[in-house]
Length: 224
Ligand SMILES: [Fe+2]
Ligand SMILES: [Fe+2]
Image (cartoon, rainbow, N blue to C red; front, side):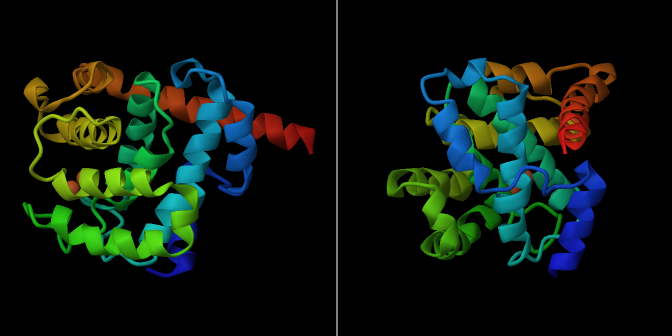
């Protein structure tokens, strides 16, 4: 996929993705040190999501054959990133590893049909990306946990590791909304809570996030 296409997608999805430059994540991490992730405010959540959109997701879109739409396309991955953030923070865990896991989890899919092999097939892709610039964002132990989360997401049932738990639950939340909710396939209370919301609430969950992003973007525009 070329850069123009994914720039168009990101712009169409959430407006100007460059309002919060990716290198601000370092400032963000310092500013929130000592604060429990589950207590982070909207500003920090927004910054992490922008990090996903401007760093993790574009890096994967540049090398992946996955489609923009479809049940496992980039739109799906975008939703998985968003829910990975929610689940990681609910576990009081730094969301950056799970955001990379979300971006990478379906990168080796060749189609949208059932396929257990795309988890293991994503491992060499992830290793290659982490050997380059993306590796700067995570320590070696976190990279290994991300790779295990990706490798096993097609066959794993429940996870104790917070990175796997966040990825698997986020993936299944998104799929539950299309295919039905099966609580035994979830690892966290937050995953079960969101996946189990009645259909009438789905828009409100998405709207909370979209409204937060719109509000913060308009505040930043007014400061210029
Ligand atoms: Fe997958
Ligand atoms: Fe997926």
